[in-house]
Length: 162
Image 1: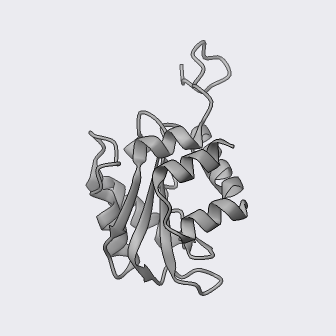
Image 2: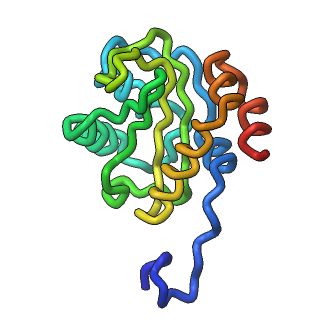
């Protein structure tokens, strides 16, 4: 049985954005002068779960960007595999990356990206929950101000847990 199917006796734990961010971590001065260079640097970070095929992850992320930019506007991008299956993380993981320099991510608002959230999920359901909770958090002006100030993990986690 699939763990998140209605017939499964095993129910996944509810998704928690703060827990996922604790697993992935906050990373500063991530290098790269293009989308592909940033994504390559992000896939090498220690917050990517051990055992994940990093080359396959990079290929999936670049393929996703080729479909449409994952830049949300406001200087933020949320790269994620379109289908988490090929590089399935055991637990939902979110890496927050402050970029060393802003990058043209082809955002609709034309702003350069300076903050990247990498989402990795074990199932499509948890993937959608991660996207929705992050989208909700990014509507919070205080949280966005913390991102602009490149706040540390503890400040961000405290805000998310409210």
